[in-house]
Image (cartoon, rainbow, N blue to C red; front, top):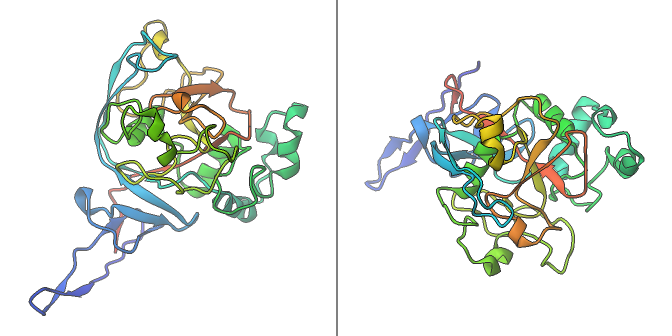
Length: 301
């Protein structure tokens, strides 16, 4: 693991030169301009060099999942999750530009990780190119299966967030339907849903971020997470998911999808909204974002 020390001199208010506080960053990353020290001196904002993605440090904390606030989830069991360590999360969804880096650098042929049904011929024809929904680099990549997303993560040295990590980061210490409150009419300021006149995906970071600086957590592209899917109402039958923030991986046939998307009504794009589909399925509605664990042998900038 590399270790880099950079002594940075800045002008103090008294006119003398003083050494600025060093920022710790995970290997293969660098602090963004203007980044500040957070948990144990880690930079609160970093660039992941291999993908050129900006990532935000999400603090440790607690989360209550389930509980029946959603219109489709009334009566579901609530359970407590503790996120004991901070982690970095992509500031935005993975974009066409990020995914193209992976394809071009690795020569990845994603056809083996996609449902061979003819329904996905559109994906198979275009998987090397730009998003089916847009030809812009800064749009979220879609038509990627869960297996495609995990292949990207393996190449990049990143991971899909767990179900609880995703909801914890989305809520940002809020308990309302949306991280911005209960008012569905305010959704248009924060995300893209089917109430938009432009019925498709949009450039990432085009709406307001959540309180922790994460964009498009609700709407635009829905997002794969790592977990196998179990309904909150079935935890008595199948057992509670991990309460430490790790993913639930118990051999179920479908994976969790989070956040809702451009084709959903805002009522289905709440902080607690979760859906499921097979890991080989790909669609114009689903993309993903990534996380990076804190590395205690980090480089210092």
